[in-house]
Image (cartoon, rainbow over all chains, first blue to last red; front, side, top):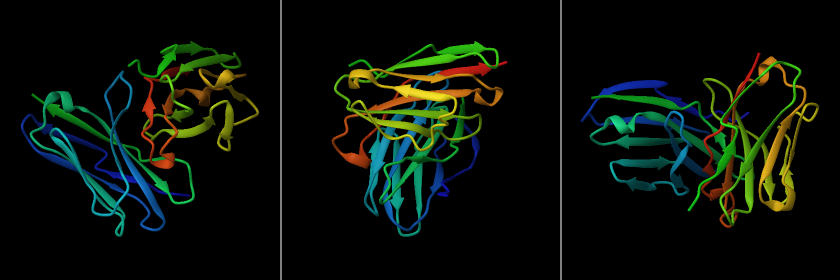
Amino acid sequence: ILNVEQSPQSLHVQEGDSTNFTCSFPSSNFYALHWYRWETAKSPEALFVMTLNGDEKKKGRISATLNTKEGYSYLYIKGSQPEDSATYLCAFIQGGSEKLVFGKGTKLTVNP
Amino acid sequence: EAGVVQSPRYKIIEKKQPVAFWCNPISGHNTLYWYLQNLGQGPELLIRYENEEAVDDSQLPKDRFSAERLKGVDSTLKIQPAELGDSAVYLCASSLGTSGRADTQYFGPGTRLTVL
């Protein structure tokens, strides 16, 4: 059974703070890692698909890094805003599989 | 471009009743997915379609769940009869199907099912 762990489970920050969270996955037989943002009552929104060790992706104030050798990815948010409040999900695909295996998510709350 | 459409958004039923969820993927997307998300958990794949063919239904509880994707476009997921433990969010997603496993999946807003 593949284990994808996300930490912390929840996080409260003040507007303007920068923050980061972690996604850990099996380091063997890596294929791809996806990050999604899911705001309450909305559709999960794709942020990044990462496939190469050392990949860094950026979208506005959000960026992500990938270390496939040690099995982790970091998501960074610079200067958090209340509209960044959401659950951030990562999903791992192993080589030889077609299936996304999701973590439980990190719930971010940004207080004004 | 319209996103993935799901209906209904919310459904409350009594146990042992049937229920159906509908999904219309993004136009041109060949691959369609149904996921189940239990409270506090990440989404889990129930079934994946490539056009009208179900290519992975290994996680679909076939005694009570069924799905179809007629003509390779929209899809219906059915539960009959529903049990208390089926209360969850049912998500539909679609992807182009051109980049294989690295394809971005685009999700609908989900249907929140409550079984009483």
